[in-house]
Each structure stands twice: as C-alpha cells, then as structure tokens.
Image 1 (cartoon, rainbow, N blue to C red):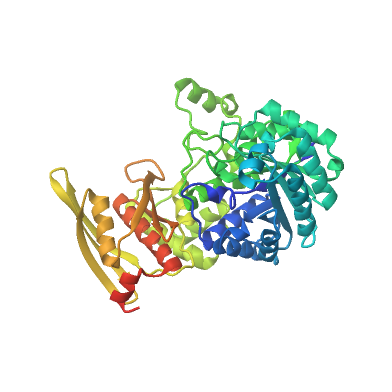
Image 2 (cartoon, one colour):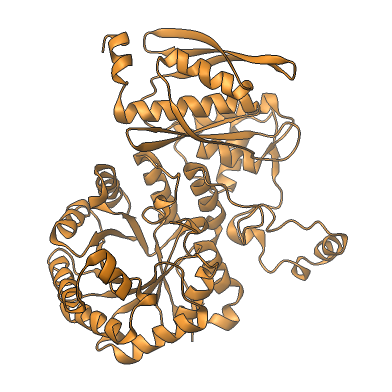
Length: 514
C-alpha cells in the first residue's frame, strides 16, 4: 500500500537565508506561483517578524497564492506569533510554525533556559498560536542533538496544547540516516498522541546527508518532508526537493510512497529559483544539473542511443526537459514563438508575450538558433513591475593587453539621457565605474558572476551583480549575447533595486535637488 507524503517547501524562508540571496517582492511572488504549480502541500513564505520586507512578503503570498497551505515562522513568543498571524490573515489556508531549541547546548548558551522553562514555553506558544489558526506546527530546534527522553516530553506537551504537526529538525546537519531513522521510530513509540499528528523532518546538508536522512525518516514514519528547490538554505543548504521527489518517482517499488508533486514542473522551478537567487546549479547536480542527462563516454552514448534505459533511470521529459532543444530562429514569427511557450508549459498574458517576443527577435538577430534554455532565460528575465531610475541605452568598451580599458555608457533617466566615460582594470571594471559616474554615486560591489546560458560561440550570457547599501544586499541580473552588455545591465538593475528601497544617497539628493 502506497503512503501519501506531504511536501513542505521552505525555499522562500530557509532558502532565502542562503548567503547572497536577496529577493524582492515580485521575485518572491513568482517563486511562490511556481511552487503552487509544482503542487507542494505547504509553502513556508517567510519569517514575518524578521523584517518589514519579510512581513510584507508573507502577507502578499498569503493573499495571492491559492492551493498550498501558507506558513509563517515564529519563535515561541507572543509577539512573533501575533506578527505571523497578522501576516497570514488573508491566506486561503494558513499555518503558524513556531519553534524553540531543545538541545542542551542551545538551551544553555543561546536560550539560557532550563528544561522546565522550555517545556512551559513550548506549550504556551502552541496554545497561543492555536487561537489564530487550527493548523499549528511545532519544531524542536536542534532535535537531532537533543536528549531523546526530553524530546518526547516537549512533543507530548505540544500535542496536548493543540499542535497538528511535529517537526524534527536536524538543524546543523549532524545526524546520520540510521540514527535519524531510529529517532523518528523512538518518537512514534514514546510520544503520547503522536499518531494523530503529522511527523515532519527538516534536514540540513552539512555532511551531505540531508536527502538520505530525510528518506530514512520517511521510512520510519515521517509523513511530511521539509525541503527547498535546488537544496538552497543556510550553510550547506537543505534537502533538495527535486532529489526527494525523483527518488520516490524512480524507486516507487522500494519506497511505496506518493506525493502531490507535478514532476514536469521541477526543471522550470529549479531554473527560475537559480536565476532569481543568482545561485547557479552545479553541472553535476542530481536531477536538474546540466550534466544530469549528458552522456560523454562512447559506451554510454552507444547504450543510450539503442535504449535510454541503459544509462538513464529518469527520463528528462518527466521533469520537464525537452530532448529537442533547438526550436526557433530569426525568421520565426510571433505565433511560432507563442506555440513554443505553450509547449514549454508557460501560460503567460498576451502583454507579457509581446514583451518577450520583442526580446526574442532581438536575440534571434544575434544568434543562429534559439534554444529552449534561451527562452527559459528570457522568461525568467521578463520585466518586473518596479521603478527603473536608469536604463542602459548604449555602451562601448575599448580594451587590450597593452592598453588601459576605457568604457563609455549612456543611461536613460526621467530627466533625459546622461553619458559618462571611465577607465578601469579591465572592461567590466571600466564599465561599472562609468555607470557609477553616470548615476552620481559610488556603489559597494559585493560579488559578480558570469555564466553562459547555452553552448556555442553565440551563447547567451547571464551576468549577476550583488551590491550592498544600508546593510542590505541587492542582486541585479543581465542577459545578452555580449557579456559586457549583460554585465552592464546587471549592474544597472542592482542600482535600480537599491534606489527602489533606499532612494538616492544624501550626496546625490543634493546634486539632483531632491
């Protein structure tokens, strides 16, 4: 008999805590819509009390996303729980997820609380959360390093107070599959009332065991699995949703478990999250990496050509990857472009398709053929509804091994066009300095990445730029067959995001008369 397993996605909460990840409202909503299409059971939308941005993100997702349960995280305190309840007020289905640490090291050095105090606080938190919603999840932070007998007490109190889900986190990625499976089995046998609630697990990947530990927990009674797209998360990340789902799909004979996930949405969700977060998916990443369905050795190629099952245990079509990726060229019309979008399962508004088609035609003029990956990149880079103080109009770079790199840039603003030039240590540095002169203020560059979206000499390049201002990091992305242009667009996009949040620096305000 197959067991029904629930999928709890925390990409927008734990995943956004990945160093360097900074999503704005439009990006959070786009990821949330992708998760809804994926048909996850629960979307943990954020930690409402953490910041104004987190609160607004949870509020907007709660109001706009239908289908999955929308969860908000809260520490075991009334203010946290009240704030989470406010953020979730408009959710079709909502859950408050409250937590407190239970390991001796956390209680002594972080909480500075006794076991009795933790027991009472956990019970009070769940009981208070229950006044706002019937669906309350309780987590014992650092459960995998906690005393098992004490854990049973804490979870028993949480159930008595009304918890509907008990989460058992491996917060620091410390446990092993056999050990974690034994812990889940012990809890099932020793916590009063546990048969009436869902047992959830949240595993981190510090030792590379997050997926293995999660699967071991499921085999021993866990009914909800917490994970993220591409395994994003703090430090080494979390259990990867795509790996868990395809383990169930591919080895249904062994696991005898089913989920509600639409597997054909996996690849698109992975690429969207990678693009919006700026965190590249490693080429040899299981399920969604570029090499997942690549076969280089001659014997492998021969076997796959005769029968794909010789070396492919997952058909790429199952996760939404087309084997035939060369699709369109510069003579393709809007109808052909729209049909290809539909074949790729994109349901976009007519206005958005018009904007994308204009970008497609520009790209097709520069490339011989346009690949599915190019189209995916165009869709991920589609215009967002946000203010644009500056828009790149023109750029020119002169650089060589025996000369100083110089760049000229022209930006469009609400007051007309502004043009500036600068020198730098290489073409990209010169371009960035010219843009800084054009906008009138310096920028603290935190990171810069450049990658090819597709292969070949006319490959589409994708640039990502991180800048810091006011203690916040802003990510800008740029796309072009010209990597210098892609870099410039990414830098301008990051500056626009910074201005949308903080406005102009005081020195620039005086210069602009703001």
